[in-house]
Length: 94
Image (tube, rainbow, N blue to C red; front, side, top):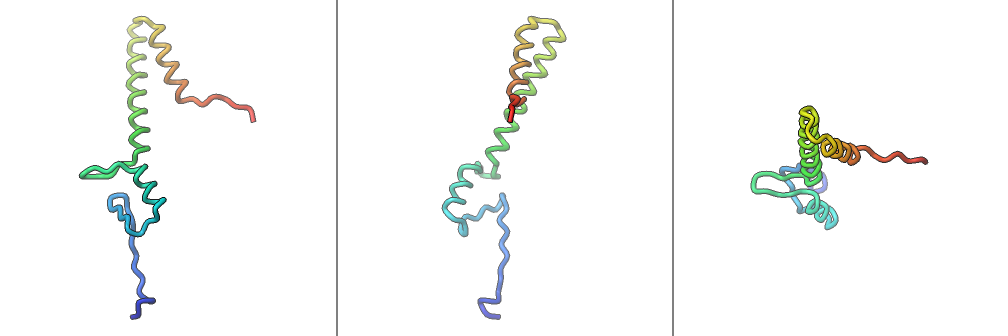
C-alpha cells in the first residue's frame, strides 16, 4: 500500500484535545473557550450559564419563601422582579 492510499482517521474529542493539526485561530478559540484542569476540560460558557442559573434560582426560592412568611414584601418582590427582568427579553417592534 502506497502512502497516498493509506488514510488515517483521527477524531478530536474535548477530552483528548490535540492541537497539532489546528490552525492558529482554532488554537486561540480553544484557549478562550475551554478551561483546563488537571483532570478535565470545562467549557467556559457552560460554567457561566449554570452558575448564573443556580444563583438566580436560589434567590427566587429564597424570595418566595420570605414572601410566604410575609416579611418585608417590597424587598423580595423587587428581587423577584429583577430576576424576571434579567431573563425576559424586552419586546421589540420590527
